[in-house]
Image (spheres, rainbow over the protein chains, first blue to last red):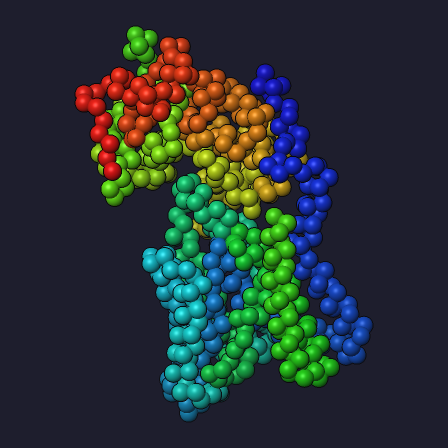
Length: 343
Length: 266
């Protein structure tokens, strides 16, 4: 009986704003396009560069693009989790730099290092723990003292970078053991191990985000924090894990960077933060939380590294590279604004 | 009243008081909700309706006073406790996540999982099947339950929010202004839904500004004014005019049940 009395609900229903079905349709199409535009941009970049730049379209260069994208792509995982949960983590770049320096300081034979020449895997453990601690440190201020995550991580961004310089005294270190460098030197089909690991991380963290209760709660908190609390989700516990995850993943990136460059300098990874944010936001993650997927972030990272590759091959001025970087961030925030407009 | 004496009490409130710093939100509120009853809580803005709802749904505890559910004293430390006890709340803002689909919204905070390696993995198919079933019960059909809420109409979102109480409201359902954001026709549908889906042994507490709605749906009406209960009326023995005068205070003293006239606290 009730079923018969409710047929009107089964149609489109009445919207708060009087929009006809056709307009709803168009809005929806626009939103779908904006959410997946990263793939169009990536395809356009690869196509245009491959056709117009000689030397771009080769197996070696495509492997190189993948290899170059590793750091931004993995840091993008960390940033995506934090952004989707409705927060911001500006410290990812500094954490990566600091942990790179710590790991080299522990393991390297360089006279500026600690001289401990620690076992690679012990160093990895220490590095990941450091990342977890910095993440927990961020979370403490955000969750307990209710400071805005942007401001907290802005501080840690500076503090952690400062610590990195403090450790090295501004000196570069090098000379890592072969076991440490394995992630970069071991290759299959000319593709370094760290590329495969990156793909593995994406598979794992996509699963975590999309198919587990933890990931679902991250989306819920990012979408409607009050609802999350009302329905009994342990908001603070989930967010603590998100910040710790961000710290650990960033730390791992630092370890990869050290392996890649066979050493560390105080200024390494400078500017990564903005590239990470650009990749993540172009990839469809909303700056206001609750939206986005990791595959999109991966595509965003590939766009950035293909543009870098194109600029390298054409031997463009480094200042032009800087201009491109800035423009990419602009593209990212404009996309974010457009998505919000159609929401 | 003679009839009520025979009915089973689901929830009894005894002397509930709550202050926020110097503002007294609720003062010595007592009333009972019977089994399978639809009762309305009415009052002007700031009368304490929302505070009372939040106490019953476990958002915060009262300063003084006690809650009895099925005769047993309960104290809820969080909304989860209340929900476990069978009290489901449909919030004014619907508490939906527009960034997620109907399935995620229906199961918000109570996701079905299996735990093979210590990591709770979502049982997507089971949750989707249940959602389709529940929404069918609510009497709504959607293009897909996997569509994000932002693509849905106001009525469809409402249906998902109401689906939660259809699926899980065991003893008592609190409806906090469920029609505040809806048009006339959708409101009507929601009220029909409330009437027909309130299952055996489930009681409904409706908070509303709209007396017309209240009279259409409920059996009894509790009137709050300045944080105190100024009267409880059977629908059959009162008129909208009387309720309005109780809300506004025109017959404030006359209808007080207990002792001295209320003091205005500031």
